[in-house]
View 1 (cartoon, rainbow, N blue to C red):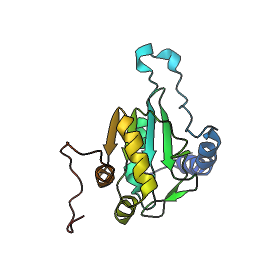
View 2 (tube, rainbow, N blue to C red):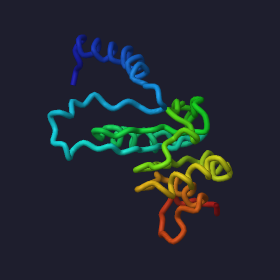
View 3 (cartoon, rainbow, N blue to C red):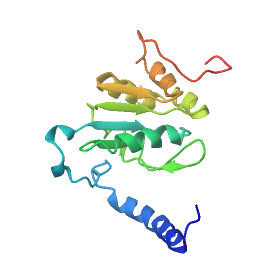
View 4 (cartoon, one colour):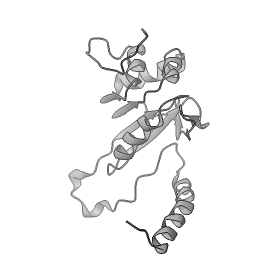
Length: 176
């Protein structure tokens, strides 16, 4: 495929405008806005009201958040929360920083879904962090669904949420 000059121009214009448009969509109240779906065209039973939280902690693996967030944030009527201790940007293991939309204290108590990403040393550090474990234990104990990606299951285990369950995780060469 040989892109035309017009295609390249549109791509460049999109790359310039997209970050500003995304920033402008951030709403007050600590949550990402509903997507611009015109839901009046869809059957009523397609509209949800799910509250979905994604945990952010230093050195998390960005793909473990971005991939699931893309899909779950597209659910019509859902509200997604990017949650961390503070609203300061949280750097991933490859230095991609994500700005939380809410804090542990301000995140809704009763979530439909809690998503815990993995990481390497960041996960191990988060397993030792009392505030992170308290948040995961509290919200995870009440959420309808709790899921993790890769080593995020170690955080679920450290918070006591896997007792009585069989769980899988990333295989390690060293005992954890």
